[in-house]
Image (cartoon, rainbow, N blue to C red):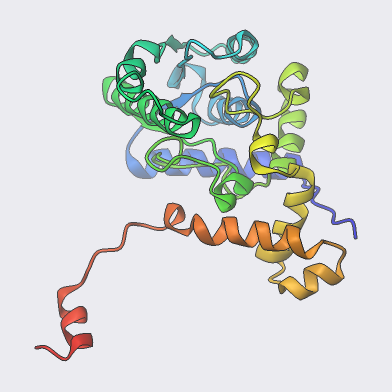
Length: 267
């Protein structure tokens, strides 16, 4: 079963620009800050912010690590050149390596989380410096699969693309003229050499977007999805990721003393 995830790119673009303008006006800010990685999601958000706020009010920050691919900086530069935005380059290597070197057995996952959180420290510091708001770049696929770092790339004041699946991000990016080199390359968080999103996840965005659409938007059951042609193992793997990452999508719970005392029978 092939599911059509096409969007009206013109209407979505106009709606997101309007939404961004309203969010900034409502919060009393005119300037924005974002991390510009050279990847598709951040490139799209940069284009949207320029259309909503003007290039002079958008500050993308490139934050490479020593192992970052050179093409990431090059692709980010193409976005900077195309949109005419000012920018900052702040390498994270001297900030994260002292911590990483303290733990000789540190996994790549831990190292990547440290980089992601350090980058968000930089972005929120710059937001204070320019009196702006940090804008997120995570898409709907990543958010529901938990493919983000809590208090890292999962931290922001607002996110204009969080309700778009990765395949829809690609459609809107193509409509807005995001450079072809960014559209064509395999999605990657660029946390270590050779790392790709789909390699980490174990499946393609094209496949998982369709399954997520049935589960989240159409509210189909796992059995319904299996009847639609998806394997039971694939459905189970995706549902497990959705459930295990629930804490990343919700505000941290606060214990309400009155409620927990009532539950225990104490007053």
